[in-house]
Length: 352
Image (cartoon, rainbow, N blue to C red; front, top):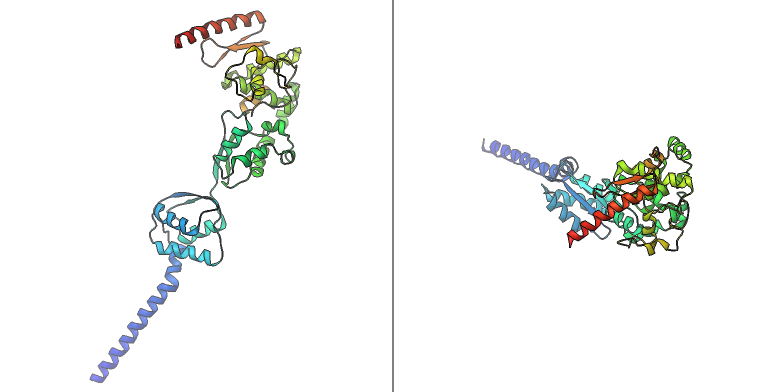
């Protein structure tokens, strides 16, 4: 009987040992892999901007902390697996969410599966350096690389543009891009937006105004220089179109500002004599190229101008509300201008 009990105990011990060993093997080879690949391992959402100098070690520590990792060993195993197969970190913008597993995150970073970012091109875009800085502030691009591209004759020629009319290529909007995209890719997106705007209908409208597509952009850039108040843009476009049709000089102050690279705080009479093909006080017709990036509203204003009242002049409103007073005759214009100057003088005296 004793012998039988001992035999049963030995068998039970063997079974228990087998189960323990089996359980450990299952855990070691199967459960860990299942967890790494199938079980979400993070509690918080985090955005990552990875640059070329970032290492696997540093990013692993950052992820563990910022994403509130549940099981750090799982993250380290997934990273080790990528390192052992020779995978490197791919620079880019990534978003880790609580739904992600360790393996998904490690592979995301090693394969470059980026989350797109928003590239916003808006506001006053009138200098290549300023445009370059705006782009580089939102991308991994260096501003020097961006400004160089805007002056690269060969690169721009590939899109059908020149250095002196590159402002026409830029279409202000919000674009979904990859953080690591280069300038060629960004300019390609601009060309797509440009082509989308210049439909057959818009080209017909340009022809009705007696303008080429490029001339529309040039005039629209002057309109942009005159106002940000969209309701008045068709009137201002109408003034300049009326002047062009009468053979008058445009006499547009924004073109003078462009001649001085927008460094003037105020335009004086002496500035109106600057020697430049962009000086519309000296030369008739449109300048050789756009003086700033025109917005869609400005382009639409030139394509659909308000020319009904034959306005030829405008000046700032004495109310200082950003609007203008328009006139068909020079006498009326002088009256409006004197009204504004009087209001400006009173305003300046009050400020002293």
